[in-house]
Length: 235
Ligand code: 6PG
Image 1: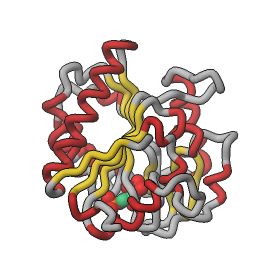
Image 2: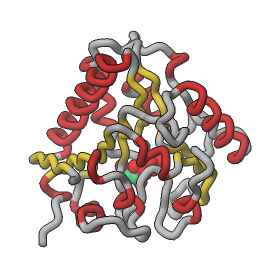
Image 3: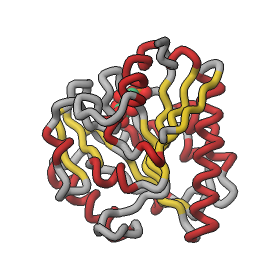
Image 4: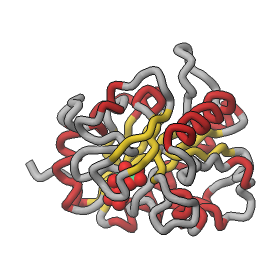
């Protein structure tokens, strides 16, 4: 059952997300010595990343991954990697070699395969041979997309690759995304969504699995939705 965590405003929701991520990371480190965390892109998580660094008790024992990346250079304003270099990675204790960037400047297929290979040989695998992240931190698009899995995209049906290139409905169009099997295998999934614009997508996630709303295909039993009041469905 999806857990709801509702907060007064975006600042409070961002703080709640940072607190939850820090707790899930600490839990993974206690259990397995290291935490594997996939990070969300877009605008919403910026404040969470600003808050998260100082909350990390063992900042060196975390492998950082990305749910998706835009096919742009690492220093491009649209880069999700650049987003964390401006925020989370200001924490000096985070080793650069434990941040696994998706190389958006490369050919998308090559970048996806390179990232998938790095993930497969670094993260623990579940019984199906799928890398098992401890935490998948994700955003939610107004159309119900998450990572770069968009409604109607064939990427939603791909089960034999860990990461794939897509042409997205949200600019910039060329992206690389983790596939559903990887996101569904995560021990914990956290979506942070704020603002009235996300209300309808939140309602569709809560309504149950529907390929028209990719975020609704995540494993509801391990999903926490962190919302501000504005993003709470009205009906
Ligand atoms: C991306 C994200 C994407 C994002 C949603 C919400 O790279 O764009 O992975 O899934 O989380 O589109 O974006 P905002 O936080 O900007 O609303």
